[in-house]
Length: 448
RNA sequence: GGUCCGGUGGCAGAGUGGUGAUGCAGCGGACUGCAAAUCCGCGAAUGUGGGUUCGAUUCCCGCCCGGACCUCCA
Image 1 (cartoon, rainbow, N blue to C red):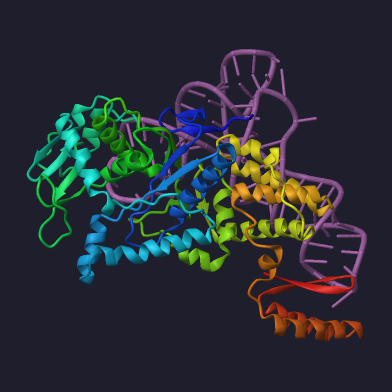
Image 2 (image 1 turned 60 degrees about the horizontal axis):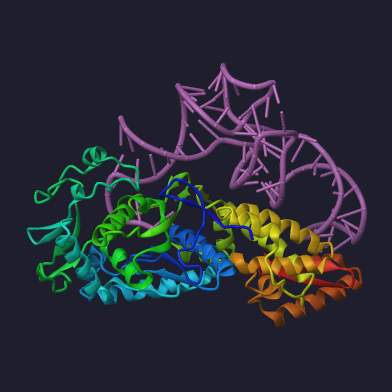
């Protein structure tokens, strides 16, 4: 059997994927902090991981896919305060929207979707262990991770302790022993959400919730941990430090899969630059499957510069695939993913390579090969494509009654060779957002 | 400033030490009342200067350009 190879951020090279337990692959993806609508960057992350999960499910009998929801966060607190509501009331909408948007992208839901608010006991237990192990200390109501206590700190993200000090922000809190020390627990004033702890009423720091949730649901060591590459430091560096120091002997995640950032007009899409594209808005412009396809047209470890032109092109490419499928309407789906698609995917999720193979299958299907269409459908299952029928794709949601009237009027005009009238009616149909296509013996229509 | 990544045809985007995938766009043709779609064909690229090699787009070094992380971010 061909083996799956993945680029591991930890070792900075491609590695053959070797499961800890082939009977159950365990994967964790850093999910959203829920205070706003998801942006297109969240979408790339989820779509890429979705393909990885679908691929793993083809290779192994069971995959446990965990994607957390971070619902404790200072931005959430700020919103709650502004609106005078509870944090649950703030996060409720964003969580629902997140689910809706990801479903629109045909991303499968994770097997488990743990929330930080449900894991306070686990979080507190890890912090207690870190204090007991001498890796954390209490200072002015805070609990801090002592970077100096961990000789491996910085290795993951390729940073030396000196750099970390040099790069630390200028206003280092006075109670920190080292500039790089980070917060595990911080006190909450009475007006802020808080939980009782051995260190008083407070709330967890940013990174600790992932250490707690991944351990609880996947165990001390698990196979794959994913996220955007902006999480490599500090988030993942700190997760590793927390988990490995709290549980000596732990390796935490085996393979780290990070996708590159999404650019808009050549610049990183980010909160601070204010140039981020809200996924929901992008989904207004094109079908979710086209957005999904756009996100897989470049390799996950390359930057992807989003543009409306690219989105249109993605839609046009999908049109061609759906045409090939339409040619074999009630055809079967191959039981196996075609090798031409599987091979590039097994090579570190080379989705552009897989797409090239899809085009070859579409060519063959259009030339009349039913087998190629069946293979195309099978390939769609691992890539999360072709979720619609060709009919739904080309003609979903149109006013069928009005269309039928116009088409029959136009057919009559054509029959009497009144092409002026035929073209007038065609213009009217196109104003409905459709494209008319004539064939010997009839006409057909599809969405622009 | 430190660390890291990348520069492939008009655009998007793979692979590869030995004649440079794939898609979109463009051009010519077939088909069509005209289109659309489909099919056939065509043109078009490896930032730059060195090095290693029989041979480099691929490996190494310099330079130029772009991007990311070092601060909340997927």
